Length: 90
Image (cartoon, rainbow, N blue to C red; front, side, top):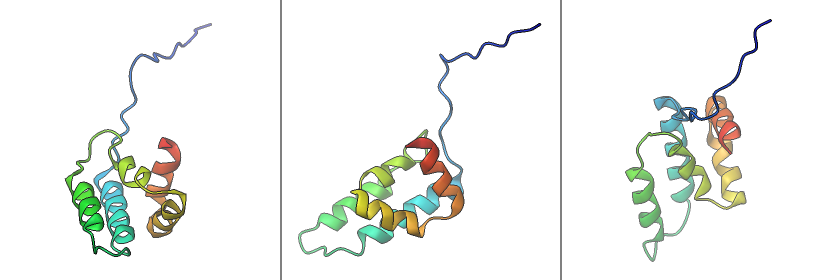
């Protein structure tokens, strides 16, 4: 009988596909752009979104920058693959 031992010292690569990353980025920008930009807050947030690169779980920043109500708005704009990515990385 052979026993398999999982090596838990290695981190799992959490980098999403480019399609998932772009879907999440687009949805985040759409949610931010629903707000009034009178004081530049939206510009600040959209600049931040546009500066994020697709590396490890950086795409989750798009999601985590919102409160629960705006997270729901973002999820409503996402494709199934992106929703699964959020579920697996929350």
